[in-house]
Amino acid sequence: MSSVFIAGPASWNQLVVLDRLPEPVPHMQFAEDSWETLGGTSAGKALSLTALGREILLYAVTAEDEPGRRVREALERAGVATRWADSPTTERHLNLMTRTGQRVSLYLSGAAATDGEGDAGIEAEMAAAEAIVLDLAAEPLRLLPLARRTGRPIWVDVHDYDGEAEFHRPFLAAADAVFCNADRLDDPVAFLRSRIDAGATLAVCTLGAEGAVAVDAEGEIHRVAAVPVEVIDTNGAGDAFLAGVLDAMLHGTAVPDALAAGARSASAVLRSRHLHPLLDSILA
Image (tube, rainbow, N blue to C red; front, top):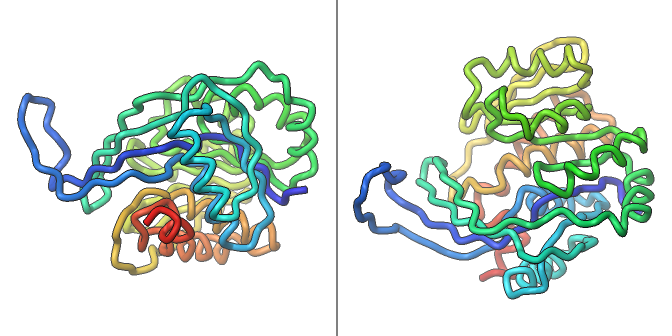
């Protein structure tokens, strides 16, 4: 049985690096670089936790098409334990990025929620785990009631949540630990405090090159600096940060040291043009 059960997106992406994000007017730009690679926030967390030696199970939905075959093969070769469900399409993104980490993600296709035929087995696997990570997608949304029924701590990552979007709210309501980034929050600490007041025991906001800030169950604020590193690509850094914090806290580590572990985990991913260095040789 796994130590961490992760449910959510595993996708096949095309990444395009630009000198600046496109303006909303007709024009032409030249790409500085482009490549195809494994994507998906849940795949990123699964890779980082696997690299940290944590026993995990990634549950994701793909189609039996060429992008889906590439996704499954890459994760298998990286040593990630997986359970797959079938969808009519595999999730695919086109990510327009700058060297400084700005990004526009265009969803070319998404994976549909399943009919729940395998729910008994999934619920048993969630119940046997020490923690459950549910990422923003249709299938994890459907699984929320099952996850809550297990009584296991639920970790959610709401990414660039603006404090208002309806889709995120069921995830936030179920969360014992909440992660986000500061891209669309005017006051990250106020948002983190609101999650603790709502019943979460940990709330964390990543701040890019400025590190991260967290509020614990007692309302104490903790900050951690980013680990200095030559950045090759920022995709997956937030997922790696959450993975490092989760792994450390499952070892009984206090919040400040767990945040430092998250920063170290993120720094490893920033050195790779893929979701994790585990993929460097696989997707060369």
